[in-house]
Amino acid sequence: MTTHFVMFLILAAFSPLCSATAQEEKETSLQGKLQISEGKATVVVEQGKAVSLESDVADVAATLSDERISGRPVKVLGRFRPDGVFSVREFYVVRPESLYRIIYFCDTCHITTFAPGDCACCQEPTVPTEVLPTDPRIYHEEVTGQPKR
Image 1 (cartoon, rainbow, N blue to C red):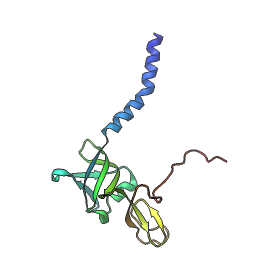
Image 2 (spheres, one colour; image 1 turned 30 degrees about the vertical axis):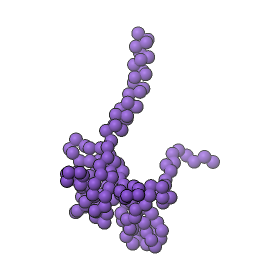
Image 3 (cartoon, rainbow, N blue to C red; image 1 turned 45 degrees about the vertical axis):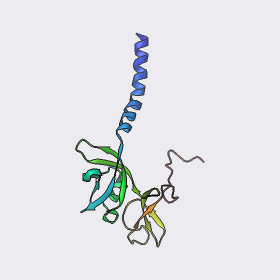
Image 4 (tube, one colour; image 1 turned 120 degrees about the horizontal axis):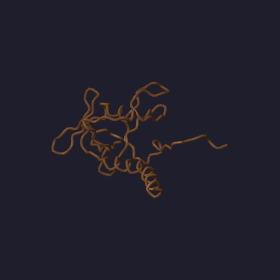
């Protein structure tokens, strides 16, 4: 009886890990031309099929509705929802030499943001800018807990 209980505890402890792994396996990517009209994004994939895109990530969702980046070749990472819409976790602009990220930059104030909008300083519109993922303007480190003193 004790052996069965111990096995149950071990399986219960590892089931969230197995579930997370199964979810990660469902993630896929699509590549095509980003088309945005009336604030709604679609990416045209091979064989001319258009796939609707949405995102639960606020910055990604805002960027996917920015008509200024329409027409760019992109690679999107995420998963298909049951309704056929592709839920985007992150995306890249595809260039022959590398994959690029989109940031929004104010040339006047030199402020970087990750979603379209006005500069926090001068209130002028920020400009979508393609940068390498290693660009220091997009590096961020998530801080958790209280800082050490």
